Length: 139
Image (cartoon, rainbow, N blue to C red; front, top):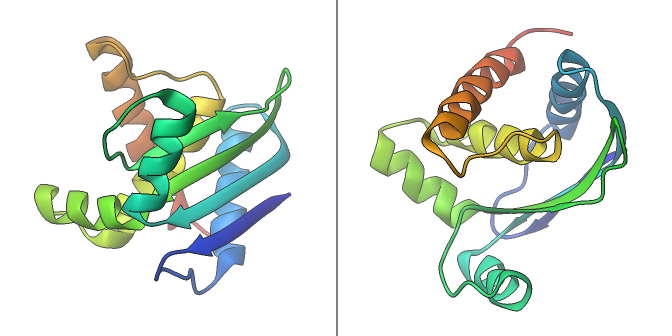
């Protein structure tokens, strides 16, 4: 099950489209859905999580908590909509595209994709692009 929680001004209009898309991402990588919770929040909310659980005193766009087991993907994905908006402006991307990038980024992390090295980051970016394109494809 995929659930969406809103702790910022953002409210997704048609969560079914997003749920279907995330499910297709999982299918495309050979994973099954467990429980995924997306929490859209403010910078301050995410900063507090970052300090409390990761000992980082910095703003970030996403924090993912992994509860997956084998090929069943489960986790909590916290996304700062303020960071997404700022990143969209910085990179000259539409807000929706940047939101899809971050949403796919979180689920890709749960599948084991990393972004600590340059080579991992390159693979992650390519996967994000591939998954963003899937959003606009009818199931």
